Length: 384
Image (cartoon, rainbow, N blue to C red):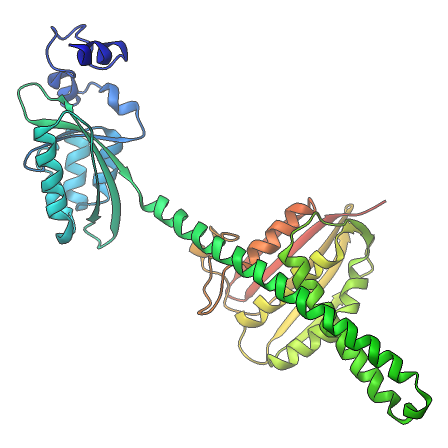
């Protein structure tokens, strides 16, 4: 009695209008066949009445949409147009290893009034697998039938997010380790550089001066790389300064050309005179290197990559055009999504970093792709 009063207090199982019978009046739920809408049809969650044999005696509109993805076009059209779902047996679409789980789920529903929750894999007619969570409420039965109100929830997206967060945790750990290693290696290199500097001043070692200078330059280069690694492993706010994009590209000229040579490509520069913009120089360099590297990997050997700058209507444009085969439409729709990659050994994080940096600069990224290649364009506001 106490349980019944609690249910009525919560607004579940009120006997108003149904003569104090079942918690939910079965004919009311079945009136979908008469052209009326069930109160469950406004819910985005899939709702079904599941009987002891695995058949669905009722599904709401959201559940119908899900069922349409499972069975043939002909049958799904019949379900939607006629509202008749009595021919749908959930057991026919469950993975073999989960059939026992469903039978156990239904058996528990028959002996308890507590909620019964089970996760199962369902296979569609096209061979796709969905991870589904079924939450049955045995206390909510159809009048005159052993059918249990069941909430169907697709867990496929949740599993995908779980995998993404797992990889992010791994990358976060790698970043911390890399930062620690960079810090530990940079300090002794600084000491070595200091001693080389002292030796270069020794008059008795004057004949080795050029070798000392070369070693000092190489150590400076290594320290700079380690500093960049340390900087990337400890994210901070961008340091916005007035910069000219052409100046930054000119300083990257030798590095970019060396990369092009290694990758058997050529870089063509079309740099027009442009106004200054506000940006973080180090972060912008990261965007340039990422986009250039992506362009090289998208092209066949001995192709041209075009780097262009120009200004128009108070905006400064920086673009990189490759001559690859273009980006597939299904990838274009998800561009900038973490771990989205077409490369065998890619992480799918390069473009994500680029988009994040663009957003930090309150700039804009445009992508134009086709069979003749792809162009990435960053658009900045010029500084007056």
